[in-house]
Length: 516
Image 1 (cartoon, rainbow, N blue to C red):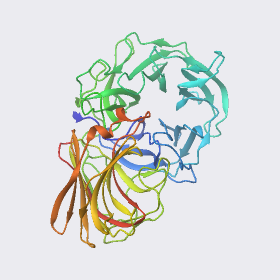
Image 2 (cartoon, helix red, strand yellow):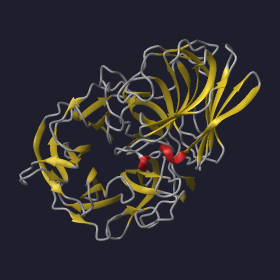
Image 3 (tube, rainbow, N blue to C red):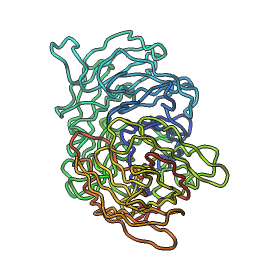
Image 4 (cartoon, rainbow, N blue to C red):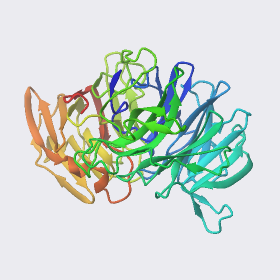
């Protein structure tokens, strides 16, 4: 049955998956965005519904002050004896931790710290009841002299966090830089170790090893990597790697992994996305991913379940609309480091209130009055209706194409020259440019829009039946490869307010290119 990649478009990196019965559960990285660690559910591995978050309150984990692209790195989700576990790394303060829940929707427990170094922690529950924890990257001094880079393994009590045996260095990978993202599996009496190597850029790859014991020694697959596009310069999918394997209960295996869709190499702006590939096992017992280690935008495979379930509300689709008529904000909306104060829904008639303080979109570690959703298609239009009467100079509200605090474009309404006006501002690195102000009536709704394609973001404003352009910004200005620091996120379309009160309604994103 044919399906289209990516199955989670836009910023949804580092996927990990497990199956319980005929249902699949998936978790992805969230970095400095809140709520953290989104948890997804599917019956066919293609259509995913967001059902909750592993980190949903500041009492669990306070991300205040977290720099962009720090915070929560690659998680793993596993189920054991009716209980769900997520392991993850908070890279600056907490380190590795475990949270657990009786239901994948939550509530999830407070993080339980793990005294094992490295990143990308992954639990493996063996048939004898023992739980193993493996981590990757810089795992510290494990009897190898200086700090070791590779894969560390321990036996752990997942309910207390106590290390019962180890950790030991079990692998340095196949020779690619940054061996990380480890996952352990058992199949036909053998253990398999799946790694991400090469860095999460254009040299990314997935490699595999096997052994008779979780401790090794590990035999490398002779034709590693089992997945990589590092030599496929013309593929529309790049940077593939960091995957997780799941059996579907019908005799088939699958890999969910990350990848990017470049605007045109080497730039990408949508972030690292989640892709699906069928996985088979060769006559020698090694896994074969996709088309000989390659992914395609359209693939065939024996999808589980009916393979074509209807998309439920809340699924990760490129087009959507929100009138804010419910009692709670939809789970798909994200904040920067925490839920901003002064955010509220107006009630049954629909409307989202943002009350902004001093913090703006360029504040490095602040929590501005901002809500956003990932841009998930190249060719799309994001629009929002807004009521906002700016006060003194410096008060503003509007819509943004936001990568991080150093890279964002926003169309907004503000006080300019004593009157209300619509403006466009662009920030790239430390360069900030504001276009000419367009006068507006002192009161009344405005509709602000962002039209995106592979080359430009175009900004518009509509008021009193008049529509006008505010200007454009090059898509290349909001790309991962152009940032001054190493970054791991993607563009979000967002609503924001600074030094004032704005009410947003009828917010939509229309996909004009079929997700392409």
